Length: 243
Image: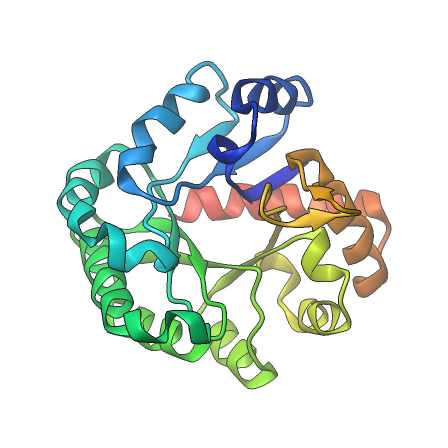
């Protein structure tokens, strides 16, 4: 199984979460929300080769943590993965929009300077602006739009730009999420959970709950779960080899 967007460091017992994910032989992309969290989160999975840690600065924290951009610049050379980064157009964050744009542009520029990275990108209520930023920084790397919730038009634009997508059981529980997944290129989709933020049956999603996304994609794409699993594994190998 693959969980391409999970906050391992934010579970009540991160060590146990890593142990269980490793015992299940999962591939997990462990995203971070601040540069200062990167080294400690990386240490959690130091003996788990299938768990990779991404360097992030979450858009909801951009106004508070923009002072950590210098640290981001120092650390970006140590990992192939960057996330969670992006923009958030939620009304509660409107007053911090310029900070978000400044931080995201700086991050994309740093990734370009480093030769490109695999990016796990947040785009809630800001898909168009995220795509605009990616067009300004074509060398930033391979964008993977996490939990994409934009319009069909924005989806088509993202597909035309070569974006990838990570989808989880919480996203696919809704009609809109399933409709968007139906139009995503199957060769550029990976599964995620967004745990522990995403909730399933009143509890925090765990990495192995990505299996629920496999079942949902099976229904959406009209293929068996075995076919979906094979497709996802092939996708992951293609993404890693292309970056």
